[in-house]
Image (cartoon, protein in one colour):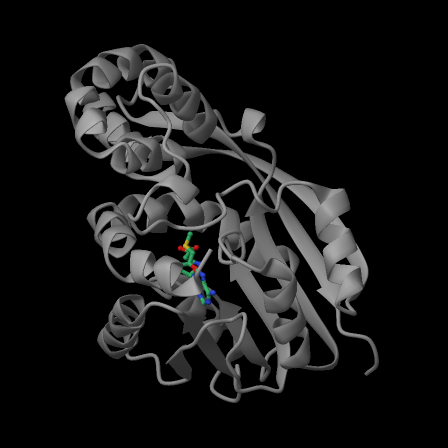
Length: 288
Ligand SMILES: C[S@@+](CC[C@H](N)C(=O)[O-])C[C@H]1O[C@@H](n2cnc3c(N)ncnc32)[C@H](O)[C@@H]1O
């Protein structure tokens, strides 16, 4: 699997989808990253790397928390995301945030950093071991890396139940059988603590710890929006997109089936709040 394909996907089709639902991501994911950032506070004055920063909302939050003596650097492989980050920093007047376009697996990340952070920024690496090794190399001795990743799919039914529903209707096209660009490994690629801790230790991190965090997140302001969100984002949306014409032909049938699957998460306020479950994983570069 080529990294160029994945980077192109993040710069084009995935950037467009994420932009369309930007407010849901920023609002929905904020409650998770706020908890992670408050449990694992970056010291004032520190120099922090935000890995796979997307729209950069966490980078800006980190920049504010480390104060003017510190710096937050957001890195992302997609220049379209980085343009948005620079715009948001300018709009909010945040002077101690900077953003770079780089492939975390192979490029120089511009350290050394005191700490690194990633909210859902490490699950799509083609070669995650290489990326983890590069992140560790960018840290000072003793530097801490905190990452937020999804736990197992069964505990994230807003993604998993929608995927099962689409799979039961639309024929699945594997990445190997299509020329279409795609996001690479999926959102649950870092869900297994054994695999992830082995990988982190193999590239030299130590004191690997996992903390579970469960919370309901808003996936739509009404049922229609939540169905649209499920069909555009995550594995369900990818199955439809990769099935091309057949996926489009079956969209109506999928829509009807998803009304039941997603409708069960509707709350009294009319919004759709689905359970979610994440790991906060911390690991340290030796020394310091
Ligand atoms: C699910 S998004 C998360 C974005 C952001 N951290 C958030 O929580 O909203 C994953 C991000 O990782 C970036 N990404 C994927 N592979 C990458 C790589 N090899 N190097 C750098 N960034 C990468 C994507 O462009 C995308 O912005």
